[in-house]
Length: 249
Image (cartoon, rainbow, N blue to C red; front, top):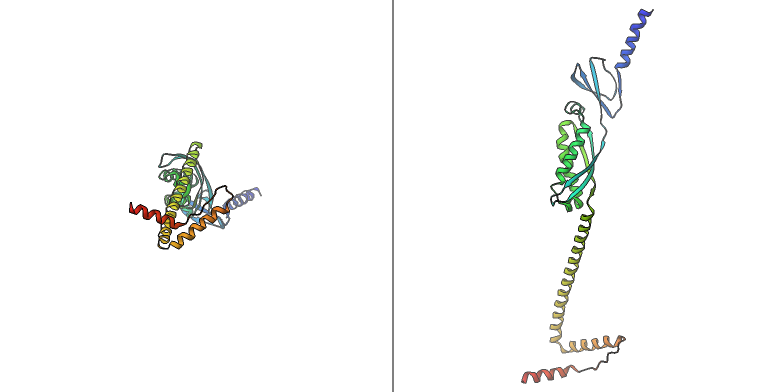
């Protein structure tokens, strides 16, 4: 009885070790005597013990948190930048055969690419053009990891940290820029006002009645205010007499 029991136990053990089940989001890279045989899954399939070996690969998108990197910008400002990378395996064969640990390799190349790309830009570009920088980093990473069967779908720069001294310098720069714009706007307003005054003077010089009405309007505005100023109306014709006397001299 024991003679038949041992082979049965061995067969049952081999069948149990041979049966593999992979979910929908995983694939199995199968090697036959050390050589690549194929990719199996998802579902139920058999793997012959000893002569066949399987490496499972997850096809879901992986969220990779890139640790903070010290970056020197093109305008010689030291900042600390961290980011997040989203990638997934699209070719299980290359992800197992071409690279030892595709997750670690993607993390390392993401760090070096982040420093390399951001080091070519000024601090203002890092703060105001993150979308463009995200796209540039994503394209470079995708090209470099394509040989490993990895697809980098998105890169997001999460935070750009700068020193307190640089924050104060940026605040002073922004304040100076606002003052400059205010002075330019005021100067443009003065120029436009002077142009309108010249146009008004030309119109009034052609029509003495308009000048008289403006004179009376000004006196009316002065009398409406609560002031102790005493106004004596002076006919405008008197000024013409003085002009004629000056012309004779």
